[in-house]
Image (cartoon, rainbow, N blue to C red):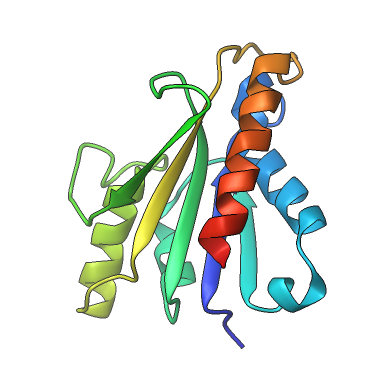
Length: 149
């Protein structure tokens, strides 16, 4: 059975603050009560790929979560609209390109989607997430718990 909500975090746990997406998934699961968990599917990966369009089928809402060098601290949220962009045919897709794939496969509008970009600063290979990024992660988790309700 498909849960109505999907939370999808991506990033590379070996590259410092790039781990924020997968860490978000891990820590959000630990924060939620069993009743809340029953309404949510969680997905984490290294990057968005065309196959992930199928993970959106049957959802009421989707939250995409990624680390960002370009957003304001501690995080930013933006609605995501389907759009063909330069990542449309690559293995590392944007959320907008992924939604465009959904539209083309399903011949219908995707579920409402939000991108939660968490501010990161250190993305070096072999580094752990930095203290500032972990504080930003905590703020994003607080926001997400309200979004899920």
